[in-house]
Image (cartoon, rainbow, N blue to C red; front, side, top):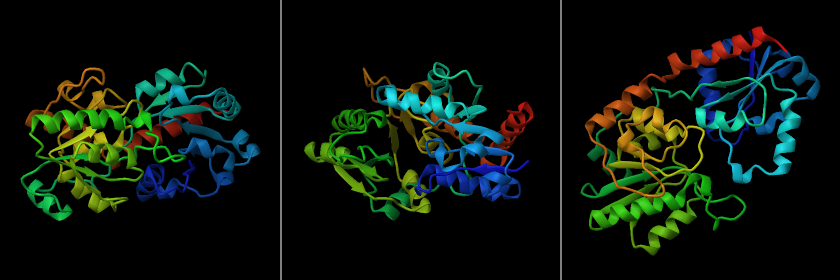
Length: 312
């Protein structure tokens, strides 16, 4: 079996997933769609980069990371239906995405969450990590490393990522801790959150587009990581925080409820501040460890082999 992996070349999560796949499974991977048995549309929005005649000939598996209903316009629905005729099966990383997707396609849907590369993400000392990224050792540090504004206008919050929910949580925690917090921001397009923090005079440090090793240290420098999203594929931050033993709370989004303790899942309509305890951290670590690249990527091979067997 030969697999072609379609990545967007945006230097973002899908490209990283492809590189990690290649690190283990390069021998069954080809850069030529025509030579492949299976076309994995990891970046399904780029599907038309592959000629339609090749799509018709091959076994095609399209990954749908997440769907935001409010943004799923009639035009996007029409585009989905056109692409759907080339697709053998869909891959989704969580059951929430599946429940939305099965309303718009009759094709098979396979649920397999993302993996985590343990050679990149690991536990480090909290105090030393804070010093490495320039945080005061005596402050309560809160992490968020994803973008929060729309690309078309940096003043508009990307609501599916929940930057407003994140800020609501931070403001409640800031009040509870008498202002002794520092928010550690990563990623890009963080204008909305920065504006909210500055408006509330909350300390923050922003490390834009940090390298992966620095991101690993950033996780370890957090007393708490907060996911405030409304819709997600992973989010990968849940697994990365889990494997680095970073205390984390999240909305009930993506795979969060499958990895985290129920106490670490908060209601966006009635936010209650919670500080994860050792049991919560250990549970997330053990669940994340089960998704290690070496072991879990084999489930993707099984998925490809099964759909290849099923044929067009």
